[in-house]
Length: 211
Image (cartoon, rainbow, N blue to C red):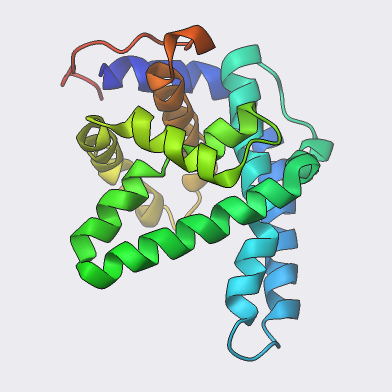
């Protein structure tokens, strides 16, 4: 897995789109906050319900970054709600992921973490396959991540320096860092999905020279 290539393409993908991404992201986060605030008054399950109801907004972000990576599309405000065209599947997907990872975590923490990595591509799969069942999206994600979990883990570790920079700038740098990270993860997905799905970047042996 050529992490340098994934990151280089991510930088190109978000170039000139940062403020559009900021605007769309702010709308999504404000709506999530509002939902969480309202449902938070429901004792016991309010927080969980809020996350489930907000799941289509997560799908919206995934669709936005796929459109950027695959079509060089500049996001628009209306795109913040594009995930609601498949809201049932998005909610079911989050609920199943939560239940499965929780159950695996009851065994030990490590199995739960491993499963979370195995399911990490499920929202991308759902975004490209409207109406697909949540179980099928999870199954395909497990298949895609077989033998690639460590690559994904190392890719996440490679952003530690950027995260520290974001903290040192009191969060200001995250305006660029978060889109850069999400665009990179999107390119990771494109690089590992089956060849007949026309990945954007071919998977190649690891290159440790990325910056």
